[in-house]
Amino acid sequence: MDSLFEELQEHMREVMPELVRPVFIIDGTTLRTPLGKELVKHFPPGHNQHGENHWPTMLLVTFHNAYTGLATRPS
Image (tube, rainbow, N blue to C red; front, top):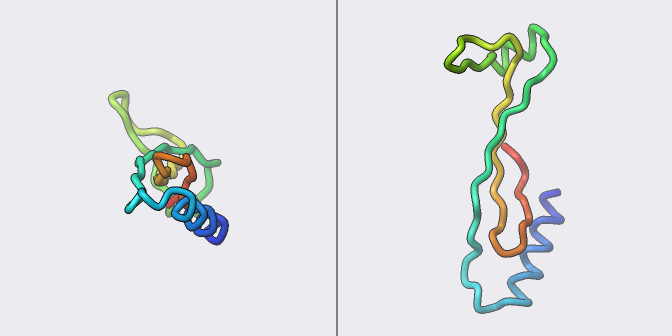
């Protein structure tokens, strides 16, 4: 994925040389994972106004190129 992203970014620099720097939009989300000791250890359950959740919650963030919509690897 990283290699593909870099190749497409390079292609866009060639096609649109007037774009000095890409503009990125930050996108974030959460995923609930199956219940398990290891997952709870690495991804603690979240909480909201109603209290603690029961399921481990993974937080993901990625950057999207505003012009092409290409997404970087989620973190």
